[in-house]
Length: 360
Ligand SMILES: Nc1ncnc2c1ncn2[C@@H]1O[C@H](COP(=O)(O)OP(=O)(O)OP(=O)(O)O)[C@@H](O)[C@H]1O
Image 1 (cartoon, rainbow, N blue to C red):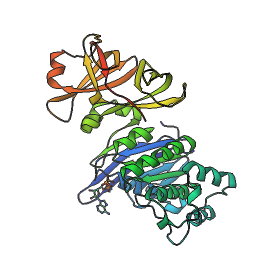
Image 2: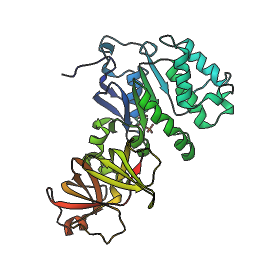
Image 3: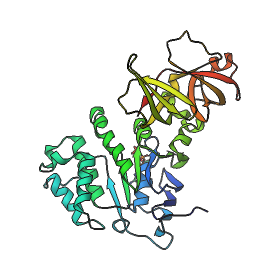
Image 4: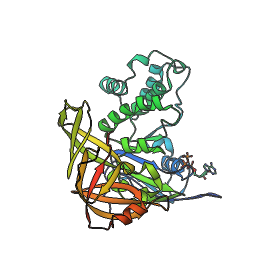
């Protein structure tokens, strides 16, 4: 039986619509970002709405020791202590950014101290926007003010439904570092809906993959991304995420070496300080396998490893091979023909050539 701590959200929900049904049984971690990921129409928003009490499914929703929903009980949304951020920021246009924040502060569940207000404004980098009205802000700034307003409400659960999807790629890149800061600083659970693999790999601690209203996979980011059944449908976006650390910088060749459980990777020089913990993404399409350690290739990363599993991918001619570098899984996307020519099978010792890896 799961022990529910004060911030643990657990749901067991069923919803029947004419052409769609949702069935979800999940327990989310008590802090960190849980991403709900899946194709359009898979039920991500519906699940969030049911958790928030904006829509009524049958079943149960519990938050810590509180019961939000059972057969007999249905706590209204406003009593659940949830704040939501949606695709389009819903700022009050007649108020300045500061006015929008004040609105939340006045209605917050508990008193908001000046230090907390300062911290939220700093964390989201919106100090320069406070006197402006929403129409005088860029899309990214509006979303940052909307997130600040949600936080100043002092919620117990923050729900973000595709908060970046209305922004162009440049704005997304601007706002992602703020969300990463937030993720480190917040002690409350965040439910975050997206269908962007980039947002998954940068922000998720916990990942729930939904397909046709069913939970196809759920677990920590690393577990879920290295489970080939779950990533097979991602095609060329299939990737693993590795937690590592900056070990050294090579100024002559402009390379940075990152260490992780089982090995080291060299990437283009990065300005992170030595010893900094980093999250690294390695795409399966950037990993090839060789039977011997040869050095006549342009690829700088050659890692000894062992084949762990082989699975069909999204295309009949392609397979995904999972190898273990020490205890760290890597995925390699290759043709069926190559896997067969190399006679790859679980347990076989091989060398992984990693073409490129990126700090997220
Ligand atoms: N109010 C509604 N009434 C009836 N059907 C709905 C309603 N809202 C959504 N649906 C349907 O329920 C299914 C799940 O929709 P939902 O919006 O939860 O998916 P999603 O994964 O969030 O999609 P997207 O990524 O496009 O936002 C879809 O088939 C959708 O057409």
